[in-house]
Length: 148
Image 1 (cartoon, one colour):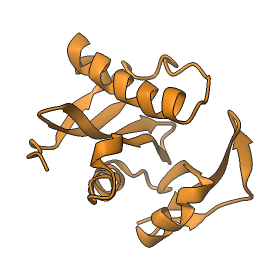
Image 2 (cartoon, rainbow, N blue to C red; image 1 turned 180 degrees about the vertical axis):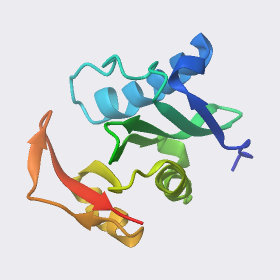
Image 3 (cartoon, one colour; image 1 turned 90 degrees about the vertical axis):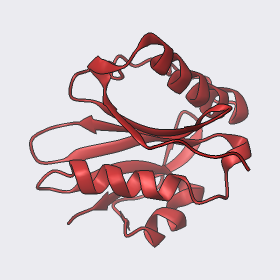
């Protein structure tokens, strides 16, 4: 196993072109290619001043990442939780999700749209299901919420 660097937390407006490329490359490799889900990964939100990117790298590049969106004064949305295939199962994503929630939660808490097969993993981290399953880009998801 390779050694991970420090956790990076950077506002969208402060990302370098290289950092943005690394994050997008990982998300496309996992969400578009691996999961065979054709959708527009570049949604215009990555470079917003209110967006936060949290990630850790190793000598192969970005190993795990999370994106945090400010969707209003009361709530924060965590999304694009992604772990590189060779880094999965090592407990890397949980601490980033925790950091994102703890640091950026709004008064109304934090929301996310979890892939349904990962709902139990999020529940283990303290998230609660907040609705019925739904299909997004051909993959079953469920909204989840966490307060405090």
